[in-house]
Image 1: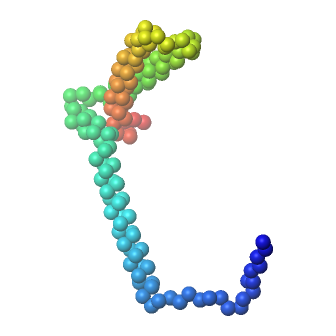
Image 2: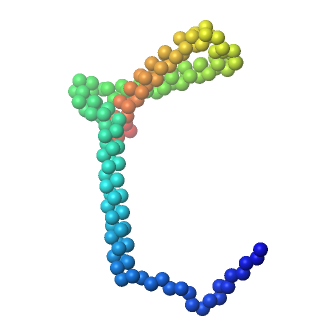
Image 3: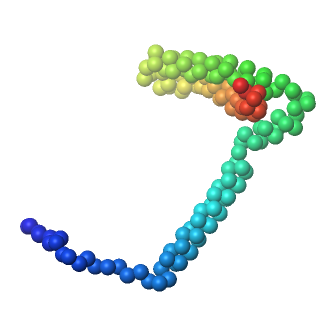
Length: 144
């Protein structure tokens, strides 16, 4: 199948503008802009409501007199906690790789593995998740 198109026409069809077309488009664009502004304001309010950092900043501000060195202490503790957490994960994966597929096959091995790593890793992760936001709450001039 072959088709041939003749594009040599001298007159092209013209689209006629209606007299109210420009104002309708302008009104429509203005309405779209208003809706987008409303969405932006709602998104900002949502983010402000769900800002975990704001919660910790309020905590530090409320107790600043009682715990003046809290953010600095947390900043110093976070790398130690992260290194320890990483080392525990490294030990965990090393043990699994050394023992191969039989590492967790029976109930005794699984329970021993969970007793050794599960609780400590979970608790250390929880502590890290509590200390790290406090380390980040200081003012930008303090963290430099």
